[in-house]
View 1 (cartoon, rainbow, N blue to C red):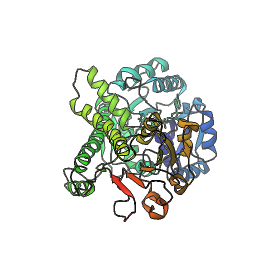
View 2: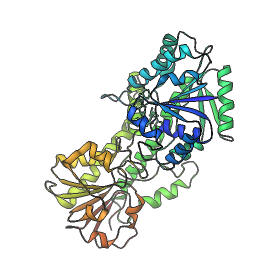
View 3: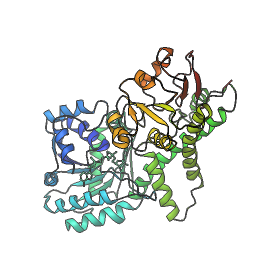
View 4: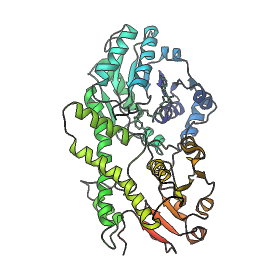
Length: 436
Ligand SMILES: NC(=O)c1ccc[n+]([C@@H]2O[C@H](COP(=O)([O-])OP(=O)(O)OC[C@H]3O[C@@H](n4cnc5c(N)ncnc54)[C@H](O)[C@@H]3O)[C@@H](O)[C@H]2O)c1
């Protein structure tokens, strides 16, 4: 069996790394030639724990990486993992996936097998039937369900644990009719992920499951963030104890209850916007989802207001930002709240210096020489008038008076409550902590 993966980003390259290291005959395709060149040498174009290990193992076995689409002609399974970003108005931008599907359609013409195309990219309900299927049939001159299979297979991995999530997903969702292709797909996934529930449903439901998943996670985050704002007004209240306790209730669950600067990253913000846009066009008033977004936006204002509370006018104030990646163990800064915060602080003419263990290069692409970059936390804190901890990198937990003594003003705004238990000789403010 030969497997093609089209789009070697976080999702596609993680899948490629896992399948090829297990010995599957995989060909990974990306239109980005430079990216392909890097991957061929066993180097990942982005930071993701454990990814390179599997990639190197795969390359020693049968893995091929290329920008040449003709290599998918001989594939039995083709996974589509290209990006589905957002338009300016928040709606989903399908131009990348349409292009990729068009090329796959042309290659289907020459494929003597009857392959199954799995769409892992997140797409709004109706996309598979109304857009992807017609493009594939037109370009290939073949019929879906007869000459090739087309299955929605949404992905639930999280960056920073992408390899573990790809190896051990909590669920496999397969959307299509009950055809011979579905039978084949089910056997493949049962072997790949024994004991993992496989949900077989139709395309639209599979597409909607992904949005249900992400919008629920965003809702949990905004819920706890709103509560954290209330806690800040209650002297002595601590949002972490509250989150930990309610998380013990199995009806609630403990994950995604970490109060902080708001949700960011390449998925939750764009998927929320796409769902709201889709629902509104369908005539649904998304009161709850709008509120989730509003709370998220206001969380950033909260941080700015705490900073102003301590520093007054921010013009020319030296502010340190610790962490620009949207979460620890990744270098991804797409829709990172820290990046939004820096943009706003720059508008207020603050002087910014940042530190991040992995995301400096990506941050430089956004800000160039408009801000300063520090190699060490100590350098980042030196002569600073306020530090804002944005990303929960483990090393920030070790910060102590020794590091803070280099600051001009020892003001610490801890958006993750990482230093809450330390005896610090600083003016300490934290999201979700009621000052006594
Ligand atoms: N990143 C995540 O955490 C995550 C999790 C679950 C689902 N998803 C969804 O999976 C999809 C992919 O996300 P990602 O973060 O991996 O994207 P990404 O932007 O990191 O990677 C997409 C890759 O596709 C390549 N590409 C673009 N057009 C192509 C074409 N015509 N042919 C071949 N390759 C092409 C790009 O060069 C890029 O390498 C999105 O729909 C996303 O919403 C992402």
